[in-house]
Length: 114
Length: 113
Image (cartoon, rainbow over all chains, first blue to last red; front, side, top):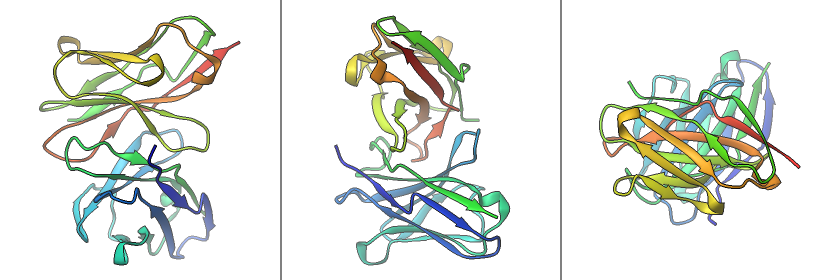
């Protein structure tokens, strides 16, 4: 079936540095999402994005977070600066439709902030 | 408040046995319910979903789930498991008022040969 790719699979950085997580969504999908899963906890919604704009964001989507999809390329999550509590697995998803549209998930990027 | 509870962190069954993974949800509004499976180093894959209609929904690989509104439950079942079913299973809820999915903690299924 359709696949969402995420690059890299694992990223280790020092606290305070900037990091960009990359997502290659399903090619004809229009809606894009990021979810965060801290080890041992539930996967939680961060943000969704459509037509170049953030549609919804949760309280986990701090001011240090930003998303974009320049020119239809990767959908990115940037964290600047990073903090220790940002260590988690970040899952990207995409869907064709809003609401009942099925979200396809990537394998996740494990971010470790030292 | 929206939430999903999967009370069993780990379930171990023998190959060929039947399976039930439990899920209860809390959602203010009409719920859309999902079961996803995650194999190692892969993304979540949708097993099945319930939006409306017949409360028993069929999914891939012989999985099914039953929506019981009175109990706020959406348990996943399979009549006979295979070793390849070993994975982590996530129950999730969403709705037509927004586009965010709320996930449970996941249940690790181990199928013994």
